[in-house]
Length: 315
Image: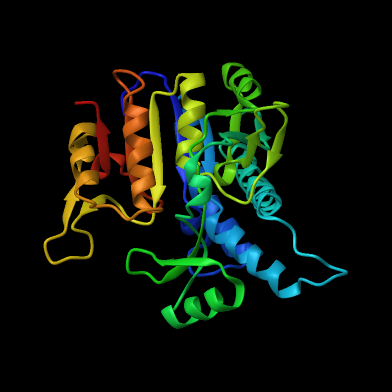
């Protein structure tokens, strides 16, 4: 990226944090690698907002809650589980970031914001589960869970079957002004983990209450980006680049691509619903906020080589 100082948001998927080892130590290790790239951006003088997914983690916690559910120890609702996983990963990330800043001799304050993200009570997505959460299961295991719990499952990009829940679009955030104030004051911010805790605004009372759904982190942070004037949106995924014809003999790696081309590819159903499609739509929406803004999609392992990643530009 250029030497011009910018506001940058970095969004890491929960799957890349979890990887193949669900232990706390392994997830903390993944975040220790992530913060190295964050500190490089900070060292260059850029203001950084960081976020992360929680879908595998919240899904795992969901099954743990379900397994222990009883009259004396009732399972907690999904919105609470999102808050719990947001908080735990926020803690790991802030701790890793503070340690890396100390190691690099950088005096920088970091703040974590437990973020509530607002959705409309009329959003039709609340009745249409599409967002995968939790671990990958075999088809047989998924069908067994569907019969046992009544939950919805779908096959996820050839990697296995996952539970799906509603994932409506965000329309605002209760914490946006606080986040903007911190960023403008030069504080490194961790926000909207797991897409934030979803709250629905009741049309009659205007009060907020949680809902059994999740928000995609990329849409949540893209909404926040509108308020803080972010220049660069880095989306960390499980692959170095976005592909069309993914996992097919004619798969093609995308490098520099325009938002118009991506709209064409989404019309051709090139991207998996509830997974890569959501990231692509967030990148398109981000680019449309203004000229000069760019979205980049790549893997955690490739985070130091952004020039080779998929770069989405306005066109």
